[in-house]
Amino acid sequence: MANGMGSLYIGASGLQNSQNALNTTANNLANVDTKGYVRQQVIFEERHYTTIEKKNAYSYQQVGLGVTIGDVAHTRDVFLDRYYRDAAGRQAFYQASYASVMEVEDLFQELEGETYQESLEELWSAFEEMAKMPDDPIRQSLLVQKAGLYMERAQKIYNNLKSYQKSMNVQINDTVEQINDLGKKINELNQKIMKIEAGGKETAMTLRDQRDSAIDELSALVKIETNETPEGIMKVKIEGVTFVNEVRVNEIGLRKDEDTEFLTPYWPHLSDEDKDQYYEVFNFGNGVSTANKTDVGKLKAMILARGDHFANHNDLEGVNGQEYNIGAGQSVVMNIEAQFDKMVHALVTAVNDMLCPNTEATFTGADGKVYSNVLVWDEKNAAVGSDGVKPGHELFVRRGCERYTAVEADDGKIYYVYNEEDPNDTSKQYMSTSLIPNKVLQQEEAHLPHILPNGQTDWGMSQKLAGIWKEELLRLTPDDPDGCTFKEYYQRMMDGLADRGAMFNTLSESLNGSIDSIENQRQQVIGVSSDEELTNMIKYQNAYNAASRYVNVISEMLEHIIMQLGA
Image (cartoon, rainbow, N blue to C red; front, top):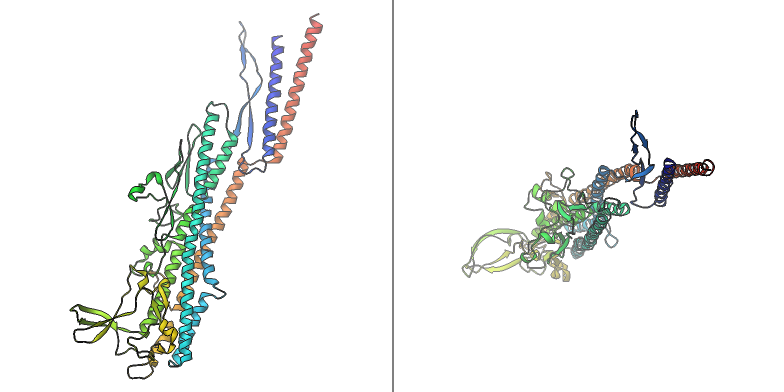
């Protein structure tokens, strides 16, 4: 009788566990399209057997206690997760870099309906026309007009590049907020998971799915490392620094530069703000490369593309190739700013030096100051305008100073000392943002230098002005072995930008394909197959029916024993 009654418990275990398996299968089917959901797999196992010892028996009699659910597997492949997150971080890096290149290209391709290259060629044509008849007021007027238009368009492009750098602050700020919010979410889920799983009886599967999805999302924004503790806490590092630990989130802060207004991510918990010492999230000193795994994360790409300052020709001149490559050369915007401003600087200085040539001189001023080997206006060989004013008027004027300063020598002679460009004051440099129109030439174009001291027209200077465009005065980078003309320089600059964009796009698309491939492999492990789940549902339903029939048989047997044999 005892074995008969015990058999009911065996049947009941079959009913109960088949029902639980059906519930798990139904949950899988309900979440077949839920993003981040990991399928749950029921694993059955036998209950412990009861051993009945009998004297003089050849073997012990064992009585089974039925079936139970040994585990509901929450299957993930940690290696596939790691590959996916690494690929997602690199893909986001190159996608953001490519987007920056496209923005920069747009600034050059369209400007009030005309490309920048057109304004450059129009200025070139104006110089060629001027060379044909230097004393023609119409040609002089055309040159001054085209020079003014060129200057305006160059300034607008450079200012637009600067504006784009500033606008990236909004994206950087939003991304940092997103990263911090994900960190808070992961930390909150950590605490909930630890509480649920502390007893060792239950697995917080849905919460783990949400945490894994948050980590996947975070991996596209920054380079991360993860490690789960035995207590179920997922610890996260960003760029080698602890972001989420057992108890808290070390949020990323943003430091605003007073001069550029650029926002730079830093770690407040590792910084001493009172001493103005900041531990920045990213270190670009070693460059960016796949081999060093430093090309990861959307945030890093945006910081790198924007750069840390407004670049100009000084970032290209006077530096070697290595210094440039780990400086402005790394940044999409800073690189094009430096190259573009170098072209403007070279063009403007070449034209001004032709109109207002300099020579070296040594003299003593009337105040006793010695001027040794200084640049002065070359009065003997220089031309002046129709107004006869000395020194001649330059075509492009610096905002911060005049081209020359008149100095009286101790012998009464007037020297016009050239005001050198000040590397520490951009307003005193011939660069995109510091140029202003020459008001004298705007009012009267004939004041453009074209008359020699003997009163004749300076045909030689006009020919040299037109010839500037054919001289190979420029190199695109410090490592560039070949010089090039202004037109070739601009074409190389744009080709270099396009090549850079094509490389970023190719890498992005290649990594996107890798992500799809890895995700397909992940889904084979964690994804829900409706066909498979329906098959399981039929299997568990049949198991439930079999257990039910088993219980009925045992019940009828007991009834027969009690009612018929007991009588």
